[in-house]
Image 1 (spheres, rainbow, N blue to C red):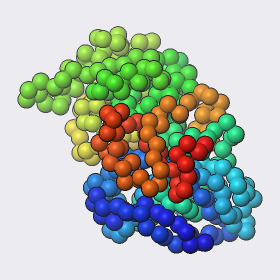
Image 2 (image 1 turned 90 degrees about the vertical axis):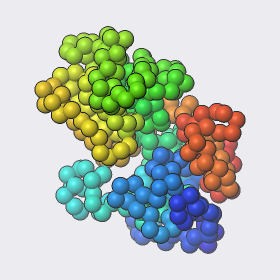
Image 3 (image 1 turned 120 degrees about the vertical axis):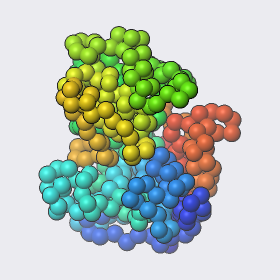
Image 4 (image 1 turned 45 degrees about the vertical axis):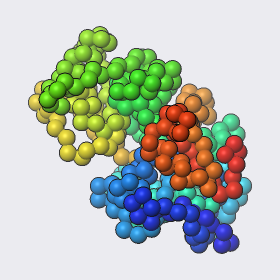
Length: 375
């Protein structure tokens, strides 16, 4: 096989569809014919900036990592899946030997090979190779498009369930109503949260969040002229507490705050509205250098955690939540593009809306020669 069209990032804002060799697979690997790939903010960041932190694009790289497809070929030792199986694709292959892997925190493996993270090619191609245990068979009631959404849903599962350790009847606040923020809300609701507060600066996103999974919404006030981010966050937190009757302790307190925006003022506000002894989880990535009031962190004895991708059990739980109907990922897919229009898909995602003015939540690109309406 040699027909493997791939969407390649050649440089900043420089992409094209190229033919690439079809990957060879090892005995424990599978070759997946990719049918659906969602566009992630990290893909757009690589397109626009050519790097994220220490991950720098130094040579042409295929984009995409939120994917699902159909098994095209299996290695000689593979027994868990077969040719023709529809699968969600976990896009990070780890060494399985290091301390992190053996501790069950393989997302921290220093030698992880992650799709569309330099120098590894991603899933926006006809074929992608994968260790067989990272190909998760999809239940019949989940489409391949749903399968691609299991990647961001797993990010939310990891943040809310594993790191946030959410328990039934607890209260949650989520800053940022993009795909990951919305899915954090959905996971919290599915796990029994009594209150799910959505925070965003875009009213239409808050309206969507309320209709989707949130019980409450908060639109921050505008910053005043020459107001510092710290001063604003203090005022913003107070306004949020007053409007939503949030207390520092007791049943009206917020047990868990998750930031999916990466905005400095969201981080600063979040640590101020979470309860004393509560948990704060950072999911979104923005400016890496932010001003955090450690006096608040210390005096409230907060638990601060960073959330990086997903780990053992997160994909299976994500699939179970979606298959059971407890989390519905379908409403988040706002735009669909054929493979030949991958460039337009990225431009639309980058601008935040399509030419018709419709706002983007999640754009899905179908694989080569795959109809955008194919389930």
